[in-house]
Image (tube, helix red, strand yellow):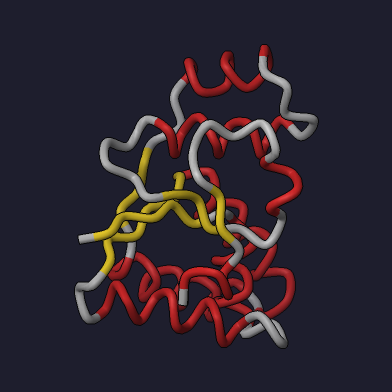
Length: 134
């Protein structure tokens, strides 16, 4: 089974059905639903997604959507070492660096799926845009 790590923007595309990207996020999560892929994200991505989406659709609906989303994801904890590695890395954006090092700690990972591929130039893990994998 293929394993992919989802960046926060993919979660937001799904939760907010953001056009035109929501359709790709739905296809990706459907791969988990039918057990073709195992999908991962960080605890930080879940919390950030909740914060952003709750501003758009409210707290109650956001909680319900996050609850359903968790059925399709494994959560990789963000560790102190991931933050330290990101601080010392070539990643311009600290959050992207933390995401990368969190993802790279998952054994057998195929890659990271993000819409900000250019922000992951320093990645030692393969990086894909959603339309490259579905």
